Image (cartoon, rainbow, N blue to C red; front, side, top):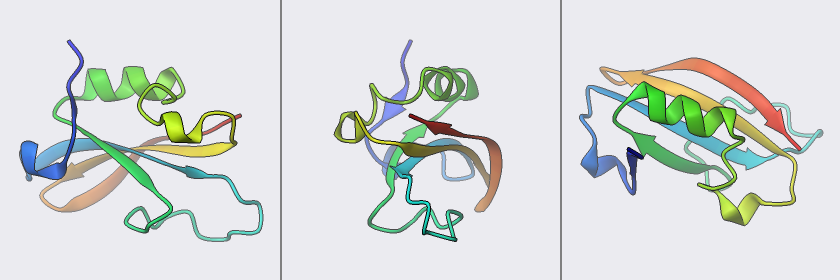
Length: 91
C-alpha cells in the first residue's frame, strides 16, 4: 500500500516521515534547510513506504525533477524534531 500523503495536515504531527528533494547545485553550501521554495516534500505516515520510494530514487513522487541531479533526504519528524535517516544524490 502506498501511503504518500499530499500534505502535512494528513499525518500525525508527532510522528511522520518526509522525503525532501531539491536540485543539486554544487555552489550551494547549505542543503540542511528543507522548508524553502526550492525543496519538494512528500509526507508519509510510515517508514517502509517512505524508505521504498527513497531507494527507488523518488522520481515517481517528484516528476518535476526528472532528468536533473537531485539531493534526496528521508527525514523522520518526531515531536517536531527532524532527524535525518537517509540521504543520497540521484543522477
